[in-house]
Image (cartoon, rainbow, N blue to C red; front, side, top):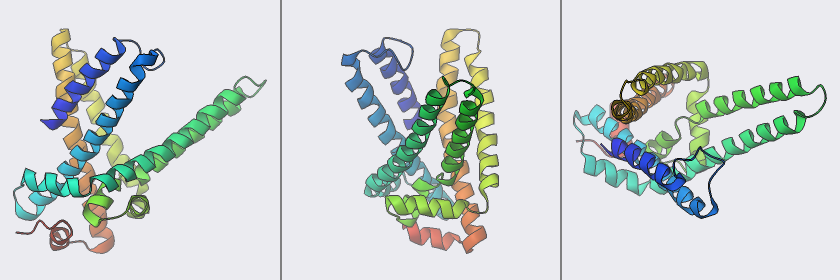
Length: 240
C-alpha cells in the first residue's frame, strides 16, 4: 500500500507541477522548487520503504511473522545513514554519467570522431551498470550490518565480488519480467485500465524487486560467511 500510494502521488504531483509537459527540458523557473521537492520526497520515501520491506522480510524469515511497527522504528533509527549511502552512490554514478555525456558531445562534432564518441558512451554505460550492480546491497549493509555510508558501498562490493554476473543476471531477469508485465498493462484498451494497470504493476514490482535482492543478499552471505538465521536475528534484534 505505501508503494501504491507513493506511485499514484508521484505521478499526479509530477503532472501537476509540469502541466503535463514533456520531461525534462521544459520546466519553467517557478516550477523548479516543486520538482526538486518532489525528487527529495520521492528519494526519501524510496529508501525508507525499501528499508522497511527489508526488515519485514528479515522478521518473517526469523520468526515466521512480521511486525510493521518494529520495522518502521528500526528503519527510522538508521534512515540517515541509508539516505547518505544511497546519495553517495547516486552522486558517483551521476558524475560518471556526466563525464560520459560530456565526452560524447565534445567528440561528436569533431570530424571522424562519431565512432569514438559512440564507443566512449557505450563504455560509460557499461561502467554505470557495473557500479550499480556492485552497489546493489547498500541499504542491506547499513540496515543489517550497521555500516557507515562509505563502508556500505565497500561492503556491498565485497558481497558482489566473485558473483557479479550472477547478480546481474538475476536482476536482469527480474527487470525483464517487470518490463513485459508493465508493457502489457500500458497497452490495455481503455486509458483508465491502462493507468490502473500501470499503478498495480509499479506497486507489485517494488516489493518483488526488494524481496529478490534481499534473498540474493542472504544467499551470498551464506555462501561466503556461513551466515545463519541466528546471526540475522542478532543483527536486527528480531529474535523472539
